[in-house]
Every structure is written in structure tokens, then in C-alpha cells.
Amino acid sequence: MKKHFTVLATILVFMIPWMLTTSCKEKDSNIQAAVETAIKDNKDLASISVEVKDGIATLSGEAKDDMCKSTAETIAGKVKGVKQVVNNCTIAAPAPAPAPVVIAEDDPLTKGVKDAIKDYPSVKADVKDGVVTLTGDIKRADLKKLMMGLNTLKPKKIDNKLTIK
Amino acid sequence: MALQDKYKELLDTAKTVGLSNFQAREQDNVLYIDGDAPTGAAKDQLWNVYEKIDPDFRSGDVVMNVNVSSMVPGSKATVTTQQSNLNIRKGPGTDQPIIGKAAHNETVTLVSKMNDQWWLIRTAGGAEGYASAQYLSPQN
Image (cartoon, chains in turn brown, purple):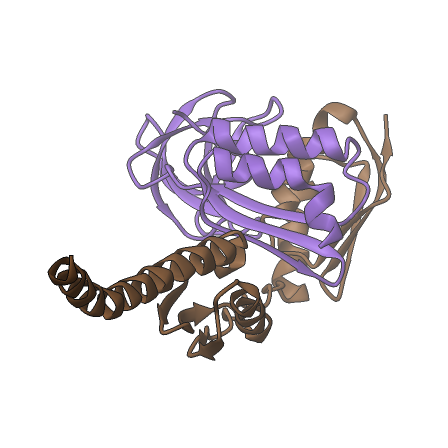
């Protein structure tokens, strides 16, 4: 009986630290999965990854902006089991602003407009600072064709004051 | 962004028909749509959607500069004048002397594009000169 007890005690002495470490490891991976799920819930944070070790969640990857970076941190911090969040996320460079629209100078624009309306004697056009103002009248059937021509001339705007017949 | 909402169907169509070099930019309350349509039919489709949203083209809030990219040197185009013949000129401009004519509905060949407005063309009869692109419809 006593011998059996000693054997059991020996097993337990070895088992307990082993159980503790494995349970802790398992816990980390569980926490990591939970944090990942929580973060991936937010589409904007899809590029952020997480690693959990000893309850410390380390975030990495490229966040879209400051807001996303702090959101990820908040989300990770709320997950059960996370003791601390290390936020190593970088911020993506902002997308370059699109090049401004090029508007034709009045000279070539006036010439182009003159060519575009020459088939429609009842249409008058005025060009000023890139804005083409149409007056007079036009048949409905011709309107789209005229507009197609004018739209390729790179005007700033087309102000259609035509009477459509 | 309001204009992008108003013309959402147009912008969606631009993506569906596969406009290359597609750009949609809003500046001073005008939406500028630029790109190259793969076919003349694709360009027509865009214009039909635009017409549906703004039937009289009166809002003045869109400038749609869409050209047909399939019009490369050697491709054919139909002369789509009202009824009259298309003037073929010595240079790109209505101030240039007329050196020939192409009949309404005639097929001509594109030699090169001077710009979006003026194309150097050759008629079946061999006459070569500049014609206004607005009267030339790409054949697909």
C-alpha cells in the first residue's frame, strides 16, 4: 500500500509541472485564436496578425491608419486571458491623391467646340474658363451625339441650356 | 462623393464593360470619368446609362471622356455623318483645306490618330487625310 502511494506521489510530482506548462501553452494558443477571430471580425483589420505568448498579445502587420491600429489594440485587450497588448502594427502610407483633372485651355477648347457644333446650325456655344455653355435648340435625336463630341474635348463643365425639340 | 452615388450605375457599368485606364474623379462638383472603352458598343452602353440617369444631359455635373481603344491603326470605321459626305482635310482642323470626301456610311481605314478629335484616315479609293473623329464609328 505504502509502496503504491510513493509511486503515485512520484507520478504526481512529475505530472503537475508538466500539466501546468501544457495547460499554459494551450491557453496561449486558445487566446491567440480568440484574438484572431475578434480582429478578423473587422474587415479593416484583416492584414493584422497576432501572436500570444504567456498571455501577452503582440500585434503586427500593416494597419490602414492610426484608427485601425488603436482599434486592433482595443479589441485584443478585451479578449479574455490577454494580460497585455504589444502593438507593433505599422501604419500604411496613405494612398497617393489622384492627379487633378486636366482641363483644356480655352483656345483649343473653343476650336474643338466650334467643330463639334458645326453640323447643328441652331446650336450656339460659348466657352469661358473651360465651361462650355450651349444655347439655342436641338433635336432630341442629335443631343447625345453632340454631347459625346463635346465630352471628349476635356471641358471643365458643359452647361446645357439648349431647348430640346 | 454625392455625385459618385448619383452616377453609381454609370461607374458600375464602366467597370463591367472593362474600361481601361478608368478614372473617376470629383472636382468642383463635376464628376470626371475617363477611360478607354474596349469596343464602340461598350462606349454606347455607357452613354445609354448616362442618358438614363440624366435624360437631357442638363445637370452639368459629368464630363465623360471615353474613347474607343480598339481603334488602332489599320482598323475600320464607318462614316457616321448626318447625311452629308465627310470632309477629308489636309491637316487636323476645320480651317484646313478639303482634299477629299468620304460618303455617308462608307468604310474607311484608320491610319493614325492625331488626337481624340482628328484622325488620319484612308478611304477605299485611296484618298488619305484628316477627318473629324466624331463622324467615325469604330466597326467591331
